[in-house]
Length: 391
Image 1 (spheres, rainbow, N blue to C red):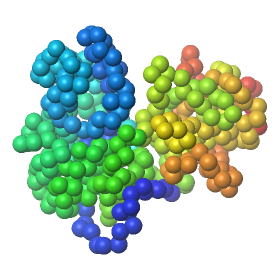
Image 2: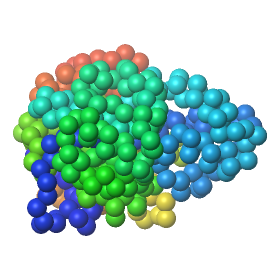
Image 3: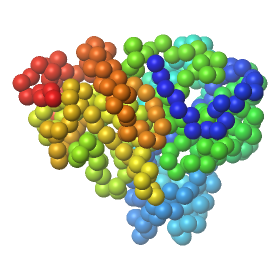
Image 4: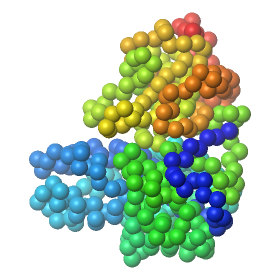
């Protein structure tokens, strides 16, 4: 089971399309989480007595080449540097972060699946090639599984020029019209369009323009269904649940919702953490609950924020209130539309049933620890202890 609610008006087009024979991925924001980079930029600006303009930064398009981004920053913040000097000073700061970048939900799964099924895959990024190698160096198997890896310094022009994608297709020996591109930025989607390639966008909240330019728009790579493009389907669902790499986070639980508390007011979860998940929650370091968690965006404000709603699997939430909660998510049930946390009673009942059955299976319970406990301990012990409250 999998669910992909597509936000693109092109999704239901009936015109025959060329068979997809290869897939090309962007890197930053598509396969790896680059949210942690923002702190580096703030730190750099502080050295020159400058303050990050959040409103201006949120309006900027993602995916630019390094030189274009540097030129823009120097001008916007009136820095006493040339673009090249800016690059020389800030790159070492970023390099320290690259070793700790995490794969976004579904990224490892997609890369491994296509490689194992014999589907050629390429990595085409506006980063310089040496930076790409550094960023993926600690992600096991990535370098070996990509047939082609290209940086913007290896072609005449970076995105939105089609050069990167066209060269990737050429090196894979596949015609451009038979390639599928997976991107997160407007410049990347424009480049794919210019290369006459089918394009799937998985944009962050600030890249809404992708919705009108891409053939298909997803909230998360977990929503990707290969068979829709004639590619080999996944076979890793366990009944109606998908095992995922563990997701840890915490926040204050109030009236059914978890509110994250961070210094900059931004969620610690990437925008691609979206959908209906399940796992365990610990309230005030004492009681453990099996939970279904709906994660989406709250569109009631002008600037949408993460909306995280918690449902206890074994009853209701009436006995939990105003408590710090730590969560470990180990399974995915489905994606949804923007009202993801407003599940009707029947859907919620189904999700709780899936979670309840799945959390008893070794493939999910083997994660075996509760986030942020001083000492990890087996889930089996956790489930059997007297402190657990099942309502």
